[in-house]
Image (cartoon, rainbow, N blue to C red; front, side, top):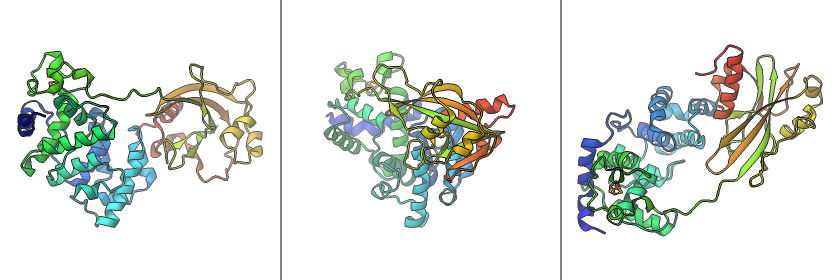
Length: 386
Ligand code: SF4
């Protein structure tokens, strides 16, 4: 490992940031740990352009950790709708309660304590400690792993513990000497990975700009830029099918609140059947409309409900669209089935609710279901976008 690079890295990176880093992002100048934390969580799996739009809105609705801790889960999920990875929203609320109850409403400065809070991993703890409290503590997200693996020629799959440990150690070794440099250094590291040392088009290969580390970067010197960091090849994610009931009565639609621990946990969605694994290379297998009756559909999607009174008031079933949704580790094909009920039948499950289409904006809905219902609403002249 180059001693000169270890010694000069932080200074050179900060100088690079002054000239070529991203400036003026709304969360860059903040030092309030609550605001830093929200921005870090929102930026985790969401593009900067989207966060630029949604972050100020979230902060306006929940300006303090206390406001967030005392908000209902439905309100937080509704505000988060469309950003995906809803566990983040549930964790935000749970973590804010922890901060109120265990730390008197003040985020701790120690990254070890921060890491014990719900939904805060080691790298996010490092970012909050560095930005809000100027702690000399490293971050190591995917961008930083890539930069370090390339710069220092760290071989081995980054999913391996030994490689990860080596990366953390390296990240710690190259920190700036002065704690007051930590915010700009941490931001510079994030910006450098997001804009210059990118996965497929790093500047050293495009030839458009001169990387300040080109002469010391091991990957560049050994022509291995696109080969580092090494990754274990992932198996293709499994695919599933399910049937979904879109039951309407007048201007209302029946929605079901999903269990907290499930995918889209806590959000309101259409009642759905159990997921069926899709055979490799086969077409999605849905129930066939010829043999699917309203009764069978209800048995599939609401097996615990007494359905005889509902069925009597329903018109024949109609096949709707098929929707494909890609999650991180699986793909889901959803076949929508339209049924119209003559009565707003009461169900025994409290998590089943008739919701007027015009009020859907008040609920947290999974994005594909939101778009589907938005289409219905537009067809009747309303718009549920909020
Ligand atoms: S030389 Fe290329 S690979 Fe190395 S740090 Fe610079 S941009 Fe990244």
